Amino acid sequence: MFFNLSSRKNINQGIKEWKNTADGILLDVRTKEEYNDYHIEGSINIPLDSLDAVNQKITNKNATIFVHCLSGARSADATNYLVSQGYNNVKDIGGINAYTGEIVSCNISYHF
Image (cartoon, rainbow, N blue to C red; front, side, top):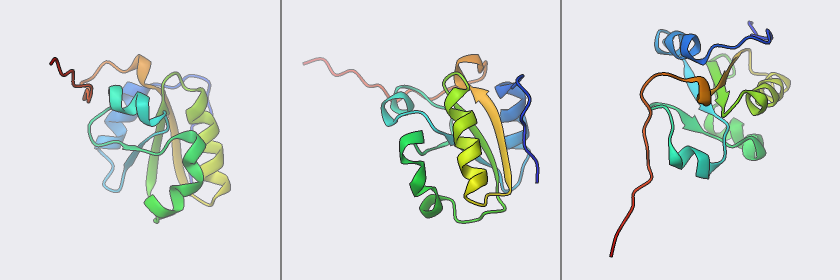
């Protein structure tokens, strides 16, 4: 079991580790609206206020879960919650606002 409880989180390093982890899950705990604005490809979205549904989406309690949000505050709360629910390999990687890699934007503007 490992936890990243240091105050210095590096989402860029966390994404690199996620990509190199066979069973890795990248969990974005921002709101659905924030996620739809932009997100990291391959991530799944379970907003912090809906995290009680995590057992339905992530059934393997031994999967390595890399948790992020916008700035790092919600990811810390989500990490604590996941651990309390019996998830064994949870890593808080901080906020997407510090991410320097590619993102997916789902905002589509229609002009009529």
